[in-house]
Length: 307
Length: 307
Image 1 (tube, chains in turn cyan, orange):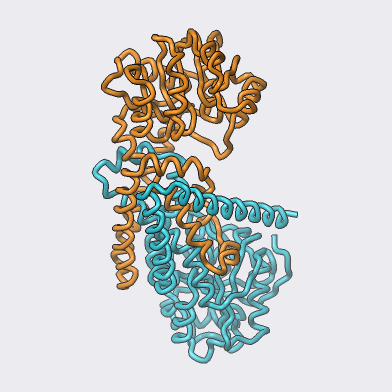
Image 2 (cartoon, helix red, strand yellow; image 1 turned 30 degrees about the vertical axis):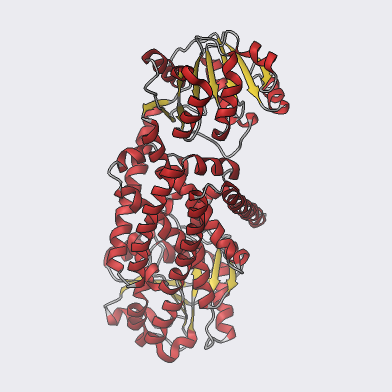
């Protein structure tokens, strides 16, 4: 499963859901001798993670003595909680972190995570190397965790000016051990990129469902919708809480993309209103060519990954 | 394959591509004794349809003697050409139609097709029963035709005031023989419905690709796009010519949907800008619930169809 050896003494995963649980499973395969501890806000998911053997030990976030035990001797800490909880979780962990502990996260936005981490960690920010794995499933929770969730997927590592090169290299090795393809990017560039390729499409898909539901005959209309509708609205089936948090966290970049989208839509509206078919066809053809190139490149990359 | 007996002496399909070819194959299974003739604008696709056995005979649209032979004794004529060609094709067929011939079409828009058909057919409009099968594939052309393309799919039949009940019933039976589920709708209601559930999502997906391509680092951004991007942009891989024609043909209804979409987007933009997470979450949750209900109903219907 994993393509690189990666060793650790004790790995702490704060948030043992789909993302954290899958990483725990992948790293357990890479290094079966390592100890893995789960930390969470409530008992039930931690108990389930223990039952499934995803973690060896567990501790509640509001139980200081248990936290102290969990973090004692931990050389790696992965934050895999919703991005809006970054400050709360890191502030709870901070007093108990070993000096040698290296931290990373798995949040979908980076500038807000970095800002929350700076506030919670103070000078220890030098030991926090932010990351974002581009992976997921429709199902969530530790029951949905898969040891190969990150195999062949991209992980963006966003080093901070305070990070040491050895720490960055170790976090890179961690994700590569889970089978991922790591690329480096500044947090600001990351947030602009994902506002464009992920956050905006989610918002547009949610907005489309909202508009459709406003029609008095919405149910009759939807009953006639086909496969195009199915694909276009799949993103509107995503978690409302998670996407609320992402839209709030990456507000600046998202608004910029949204305004640029509005300008393109206004131009196309004008072409439709004026009966400018040539203009529409030109735009549609450019879009299709780019979409086909993307799909071809993606297939080629997938073929390389399985070789 | 087909659930109902359906007989015909001679079926003429004008436009033997994916849509027309699939219908020819489905009806040949329903009534192997019937004769099927293909009509087209160019030789190569007709020759291919003959090779594949999709039609028994073929005639070019600009060959009047061949058209006369093709339409002599034809009791059914299906127009399966792009909607923008409706007037040209029907005007070419009109002089040779038998008095008893019943006509239908397979276009994605209906008001413009009806208007073109009225102009081309004159009093014979009473024998034209418009229809729209909700089916397709990414591949096109007669080589992509499948006899079960319409199995379990919806077909909207849009009767005109001039149509006789027996003619409408026969066109309904034709699509049911191909395995489809027929529903009746006025042309105006059809066009408003499909502007909402199909034409708008296509335009939004094309617009999204256009916006993304405008960014100077478009290629780098797209290289990091994942499965959400894949689903959201699938519609932007559709035929530019076909979607130009549909946007032009259904302009009024499409502009209305587009303006309502713009209003929803403006409200969500304001919520993002103001940091109104509760408003976003409410909208996202409503969208997700509707999307999930739709998917559940669709699965239930698919299960019924295969029983």
